[in-house]
Amino acid sequence: MANLRAVLFKRPAVYWNDKLIIFPFAKMEALLYYLLVNGEATRENLAALFWGDMEDNAAKQNLRNTIYLLKKTFAADLFITSSRARIVLNPKLAISTDLELLTANQITEFLAKNPVEFLEGFYCKDAAGFDHWVSEKREHFRKIMISYLTKWIIRLINHEEYTTARKYLHDLIRLDAYNESAYRMLMKIYAKEDSYTAAAIYQDLERKMARDLGLAPSVKTQEIYQRIKARKNDEMVAREIVSSHHFFGREKELQRIRLWLENFYEGARGKQMLVLQGDQGVGKSTL
Image (cartoon, rainbow, N blue to C red; front, side):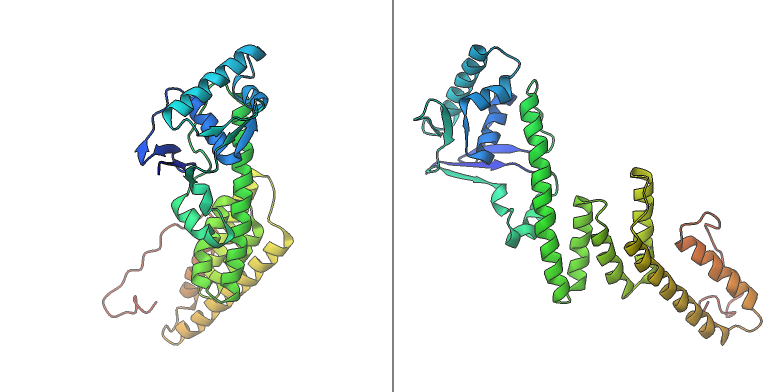
């Protein structure tokens, strides 16, 4: 049986019986993408979507020609046109797209195979209506991915699969750059092992929001950061107490190094490099 396969994410492409189809003009390709997603459309809507800047008769003539070329390229029964008003993609044909993976249970597989947005890099000249539809669909699919991925992450955390959850939280932030809830989850997971990385994640969010939005993170997010910061300070004090058993008369130097390191992790400007020098056996490695 003949089959049509379309890639709608990554670089869009259409295959007929596993052979890549090269379209003679972009609107022909774009019209097929539109019907692959929606399944059907009225002739009036398609004419306005792709030839909205033309007179009605000219727009409908262009639509008829494009539909004819699509049937000629693929199959005569590609569309069902029993009604003069509507064009329907034939459901009996073997048609598949990568949108089929965009489900709650397959969201991680979908993201692994489709790291970019809907119709990435595809452009259709003189088709403002189609461009507007593409923008709406990109946002629609992004919200679906965020919803499915959030539920998947919550499931992982409930099963204490923190390492895997951490990976997908980074994906979630890539999809939703100012998602403070995702940042808070990520900070808490990292804080279990590495309070410095957890603090750095907050600082990244803080810089991003200040630069792009002119805002600060919410009070809830700041409170988590302050707790992580306090824990980090406690860890440094504990290490300093342990270090004091090995270094006598170097309290001032140890305090200075601790201050420099703290400023560095806080993102403050200042010392960018610390060099330890000394003879062999004086304790550089221990420090």
